[in-house]
Each structure stands twice: as C-alpha cells, then as structure tokens.
Image (tube, rainbow, N blue to C red; front, side):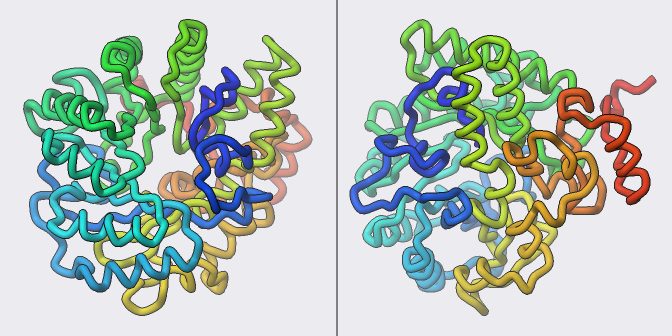
Length: 423
C-alpha cells in the first residue's frame, strides 16, 4: 500500500508502525515495531469461502453462489489460526467470496481475537444490517473494508446485481452508527476512472475515514477484463487527481486516509512530485519509501493468502501458483520454505528481477512493484511490472542501459495503450 495521506500530506495514519516503522500510529501495547520491513510477518488475506451473493466482473478468484466443496472446517480453521498467532502474524483479513455468508465467521473471529490477532473483514457491504454491524462491533473486529467501485449504476454493473450500491451504502452507515471502523476499496478501471471527482465528493458527504484505490490486476474473472485496465497516461492522471484531492482534504481539515494499492510506482511518482514542490518533504518521503521497500517486502514477505481450498499463495492475486496446503503443512512452515523457486525469488527480488525494473534508479523505493502482474502479462514473474507508468527518462534508463538489456535478452515490451484504444 502507498499511503498518500502520510507521504504527500505528512499525516499520522493507522498502520504507519507496520508500514514505515513509526511509533504512535496505531500499534497496540505489546506489539513490536519492526526494525526493518524485511522482518515483518505477513498480513494474511484468508478467502474463507467461495460463496458470494454478488457476481463481480473483476473478481480475482471467481467466487459465486455456491461454496467450494473442500472449504476448511471450523476446527481446521482454528488450527490455522493457532499457527498464525504463534507465527506472529499481525492481522488476519477474512475475505471471500463474501465472508459474511460463512456461518461460523464470528466463531472464527472470536477465536482469532482471543489469541491477540487483529481481525479484519473484507466485504461487499450489502449484507451488513444494523444488527450485523453491532455483531461486528461486539466481536472486536478491528476494521471492515467495503468494496465500492463507483457511484450508483457504475458500481452495480461491476457487481452484477442491481441495487448493490444502495445496499453497500446502507451497510456503511450501519457500521458507522455501530462505531465500527470502516474504509472503502475501489479498483481503478476504464469504467470508473472518470468518476473520481464524484467518489471524493462521496467520501466527504458520507464521512468516509479511509479509502484505498486499487490498481487493476487481471486475475480470476478479472482476466477477461484486461481491456478495461487503465493506460499509463490514465494511471498518471488518476494518481495526480488522487494527490490533489488528498491535499485538498488535508487543507480543509478532513482526516480521511487515502491510499493506493498494488502499484508501488505510485510512491515513486509521489516522491518525484514532491521534489518539485518541497525538497525537504521529498527527502523525508524518500526515506520512508526506502524503509518500506515497496514490492520488495510485499508479496511473499509482508502479505500472503490462504484460499478457500486451504492453498497458500504469495498474495491474493496469485491463485495460479500454490506454495503449499495448510491441511498438509502449517502456514508458517510453508511461508518460510525457500526451496520453492517463487518464494525464494520473492524473498530475494534484487537477484531475480529482470529488464528495466532491474536497472531502475528507484528500485530500492519500488522493489519491482507487483510480481504477479508481470507473471500474468509476460509469463515471467521476474519481468518488469507492465503497470509501471514511469518513463525511461524518469527512471534514468539511458541508451547504455538499454543496450545492456538487449545484450542480456531482457527486453520486455511495455504496454503503452490498451487494446480498446488501438486503431
């Protein structure tokens, strides 16, 4: 995650203790602030059920009306939670499908919280009634992330069900009334990028305290939406607007935390932007990004995934590659096993990444961004991230470096325009 509010506006925001090693930003008593990003235990995204009441066109795991036949039982899930607690995992994000459709969800949340784990729910929000919101609050859920990908019909087209927007908004309000900390999760695509202005107006009118803009990853059902991804120019424009709106919120005294997700290039872009505005602040941001390491300490290090079959993945988008099965080995053992070639590379990216990412001036700040997107696009997990929108000039990829890539066979044609825009 790139915390725009923290980097661009110097706000103290929850999670800075884990993201940047900063005290006084939401850590609980007894929680150790990591000395380096590389030593962090992973936040675990756990897709505990396939069942979902919506039909989202960009679902990264192809969830649907029926649950998977081999979902972990309650007792199996508790055994996993025991291991995660002993391993020192800071947070478990219960996702799906729609996690609120799993009957034993709150039994598992209660079990996790009793063991000191932070429990987070990732939901579409449509099932959060007033009573459900109170239940979420009383069971000690730390945070609820609600997916929303546009205003009104735009969101409903994403979700595949009419009325999903209104139900999600009702769920947001029910959580707010119950005192539950919430945030919104939005995936940027061709269908909603023009809606950014209205979305920020919505954040203001509905008193949203946190919003995360996800860059698109074409996994699961989302693979059929590759043409809906933003062009590099659109990505730059979107980040420019997000920066401007975040600054305007700060100047108006609003405390909404704005973040972008799944493209660590946004951190570098923010740094370059600040170099033109405030060199002192830019240097502080460079230090924060350098500590965090971007993608270098994300997938396979600081974030992991357990799917609804019990398979472990480097992150929630990497379902086409299994690292192991929690029914056969504990998550902690799977996670630290570098005999797997992908896991070994993710924990040592500098010696594996190829192409322009390898020679990029800002590798220490970005860390090669999202490896799964490179794998999905180029068929090579160590290729450049195709969503990098920085120019060769910006990353100081000169003719000599380009010639080196030619000699070593590391030239990967970066996408410039989407298929829908080609003549």
